[in-house]
Amino acid sequence: MPELPEVEALKDFLAEHLTGHEIVRALPVAINVLKTYDPPLTAVEGRTVTAVHRYGKFLGLRTDGGPYLVTHLARAGWLHWKDRLPSGPPRPGRGPLALRVALETGAGFDLTEAGTQKRLAVYVVGDPAEVPGVARLGPDPLAGDFDERRLADLLSGERRRLKGALRDQSLIAGVGNAYSDEILHAARMSPYKPAGSLTPEEITRLYQALRTSLTEAVERSRGVAAGRLKAEKKSGLRVHGRTGEACPVCGDTIREVSFSDSSLQYCPTCQTGGRPLADRRLSRLLK
Image 1 (cartoon, rainbow, N blue to C red):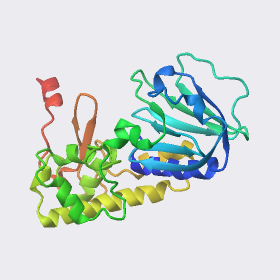
Image 2: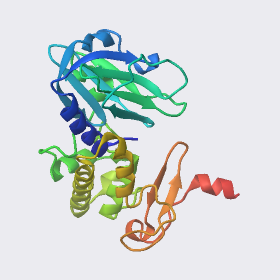
Image 3: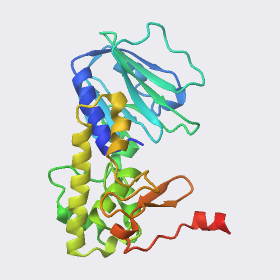
Image 4: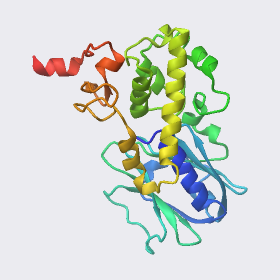
């Protein structure tokens, strides 16, 4: 799933390629991708893109005198830029193509979604706050006013584990499964640690890990073409998706805990005092 750094890079890429250009066609291929109907998708046609914004993991295209085109790529969605779009209209079918946006120059982009769980979402709204997922977003962790005190206030009284708290978009916007693993590894904290139990020193460590991990990922992604962002993300991860590999900090073996629809990765030496975390799913398989 694209998270804050990749969506930030896509925002910069689209701002460079879209701003000042007219949208001549917005063609839905998978009708279920549209989550709003008034104004219609055609309301962005004939309008010039004036800015591109990021809201957590959401992207928003602002048009001159018209609505915003807001999208969330979900788990398996992606944006593919094309300097020259195919001349014919896209054909609805079983392929991954969900929506095509064409500019007056002949360039544009496709939104695609792999797999059978179709969660990619497109909204046409007068204000991004009309999108429920945007309206409930917590603060952006890279915002200038997001400091240690803000993080401490957000986690105060939290009963959830750190992993779950960091992934909650209404608590902190933009962090998902991959970067929560990276942040907790950098902070040397267990993903199972109660979020509301952190000492002031631990808040400082977590805050520094949060800002540093995301900032470095944004810098790695900056200037990378949209089609290469997925590979760039994977290459920069230290623990997430690296089960069985050596921890780059201490050399211990990176372990995994599996859930019904996701998994987390961590280093026992760096994060849990050398103790492997219980993986109930794996335990059931071994019985």
